[in-house]
Amino acid sequence: MKNIILRILVILILIGLASVIIIEGLILNEGSKKATNQVDYVIILGARLYGDIPSPALLERLKVAKDYLIENKEVKVVVTGGQGIDEKIPEAQAMAKYLVANGIEENRIIIEDKATNTFENLKFSLDRLREFDDKENLKVLIVTNKHHIFRAKFLAKRLGMDPDGLPAKIPPTIIFQSYLREYLAVIKSLIFDR
Image (cartoon, rainbow, N blue to C red; front, side, top):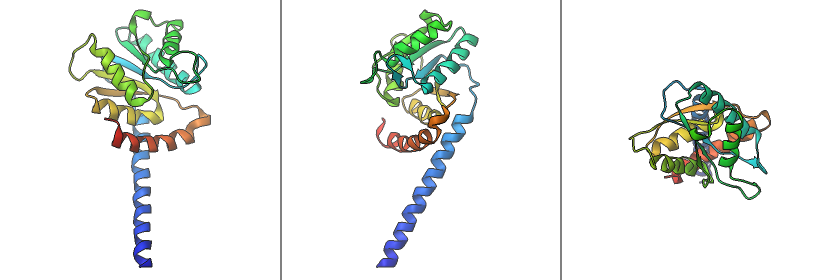
């Protein structure tokens, strides 16, 4: 009986290790790709604010999005993120404010300010885009930190979008916890985010 229990434990540990290696490999691979496709819209996923100031992770997203939008003046952008309990304003409003202050025209910015997680960011952004664009399989460029690209693209595909990713740097102080948390978030999204 002890041998059977031990074998089962070893098998479960090996399955767990294999899942970590596979999922983290997918996360690292997607986070290292460069965006190359023409897109219909850019979607910048929200992240924490300190009051009304973007966190370092959100600031990295905004910087790479701004550079892309300056080079691609015909593309509109959705800023998505609601208001957390300790945030003075919705994340989307802070993001729009940053973009306007850094040379992006206000009429190019679409605000989605209700989402509270990645799945809602993408679903509610798609809902906003559907208010004026009924094109099938919208080509979107999702801007988020490197560790988050794989899950964001997976969820966007599940919602019917044709996604590409624009990875932003991860602040050095949160690299390890970001990859660990994202492994768990991928498993949660595979099961629950539909």
